[in-house]
Image 1 (tube, helix red, strand yellow):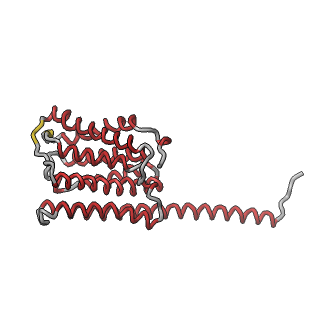
Image 2 (cartoon, one colour; image 1 turned 135 degrees about the vertical axis):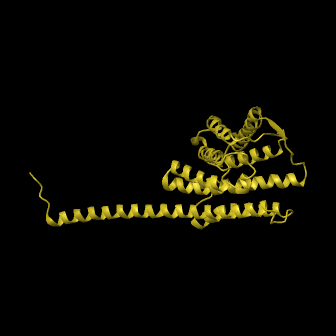
Image 3 (tube, helix red, strand yellow; image 1 turned 60 degrees about the vertical axis):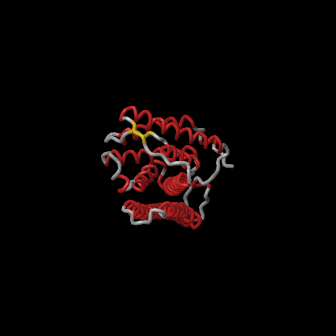
Length: 286
């Protein structure tokens, strides 16, 4: 026998269907709006730190700032840059741990392996690259207060950069759009942030190769953070590599293709990092 629905039952079914469709439409609308909000906040943060970074770099390069105050101004700037995304996280009510600000269970292993990667980077860039382009003696920083200031400056710059671009921007964009769009957008922003016009004036390389080397470094650090789930690793690697390069007495002679070789170096380091590191499932927060 066929069941015939009464008109009232049919109306109730249609109302439920319309309510379901309306809820789905509202959900997708809210999702699109929230994605746009995250994207706008990420762009605002990027534009803020990028503009301040370029202004300070130009002032330092033109010697408009007192020389004895430049290190302290740089330290204050990097501390401010690191605090801005943390304040945003607090205002938004999001936890610091979900943005990579955590100490992993195997902290010692993460720390030592990050330094090992930095040493490998120095060995490749100085000795392997130097065997191709030649090496030259470079003045190193003597063990003094200047070395301490340099080390602290490098560490704070690494902390600020990683919190901004990997901890905040990459995490927010990954939640909104997925990992690969977040990887590209955050890496482009990080590349533009690290690209300094005064610094490029001292680099003997074509603009394209120089930008590609910075982009390759940003991609490497983004994958590094995705793999380890903690900012401890990219911060340790970046600070160690920069400090080791600063104190190395020999440097490869700059050539037009030097930056392009650095791109190949990061392509080589990425699978090594993947082999070195534990699986994401083994990452347990302490």
